[in-house]
Amino acid sequence: MPPIVVKTNRILTHSNSEKIEGLCVWIAENSDSPIGWTELTAKSGLTHKELIALFQIHKHLTPMAYVRSVREQKKKSLPSHPQPNLFNNLDDTNPVKD
Image (tube, rainbow, N blue to C red; front, top):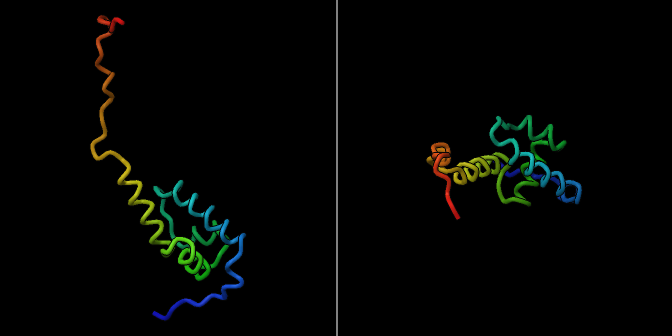
């Protein structure tokens, strides 16, 4: 696959940097939902090629690799065995005394 060429003077703007950062926040907030190219381009207002170039510059990943990394990070931060509510079975007839 040939490299994607995008004119950098058009793509390296403060506005585009803010779009990428905003999109990254949106990805984190919506990572439990399906996220594809349609959602990414619609949310950012950037083209497929622009997204790839900007993510490579700012995140050193493709957009879809970034989505996967956010999802993997979220899985790692969740407990593998959720704790039951430990206080459900407390006996209210024997309160703790100070």
